[in-house]
Amino acid sequence: MKPVPSFITSARGALFDLDGVIVDTARFHYQAWRRLAAELGFEFTEAHNERLKGVSRMRSLEILLEIGGLQFDEARSVELATKKNAWYVELISKMGPEEILPGAADYLRQLRADGVKIALGSASKNAPMILDSLGITGLFDAIVDGNHVAKAKPDPEVFLLGATRLGLQAADCVVYEDAEAGIEAAHRAGMKAVGIGDPAILGAAEFVIPGLHALLKPAGLPF
Ligand code: B16
Ligand code: MG
Image 1: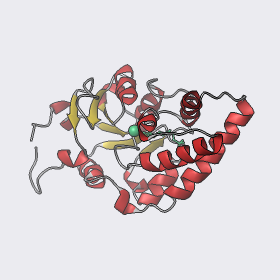
Image 2: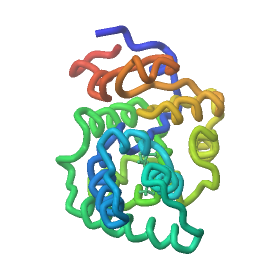
Image 3: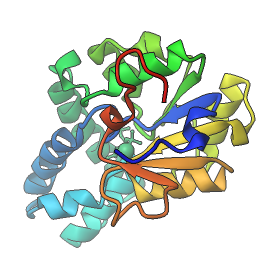
């Protein structure tokens, strides 16, 4: 295993993206968007879905409509996004703690034991409901999600607000992200980033790991 860099072990705050870092709801987003596309008369593939990761709900709809070569006014767009969200919520409401990605809950507990403050920094307006279904709301000191910010990643707003809610300076916080836009948002906030996923895609991050399990200390040992 690569040695864990000191910017991770010395951070006083940890800001976590949700989807792709703590849980993987991409397949449920995909099912719901695909259903909407089918209703509108075009095919929406898994490759198309990759373009929606980390992107806000309304921007996701814009991308989907571009793929289908369609355009609607604001009212109809909101109606379509609301419909997709209802299908998505129906799918994710069946999730339980078994959906937590390997090592994620244990890593949050490890950070808490080390005195690190923890915030969520997610684009999802469904984040509070998802954390409740997973049974891990209590592991967070602050939750910042799509309901609290006006500007989507790569804008740094979500992470800057997270640091403020933790009572910390940006430079004291580390961001954990699976999307390129999220890594850029971290850097624009003045924070270092841990990429979760493929180093070929997340090369801008200061450190890239396949999942949070890679940061668990062997039982009883410090790093
Ligand atoms: P909602 P994250 C993002 O979550 C998802 O990756 C993205 O696919 C989704 O469109 C976005 O949340 C908005 O989600 O429709 O639930 O508000 O990665 O920022 O945790
Ligand atoms: Mg994500």
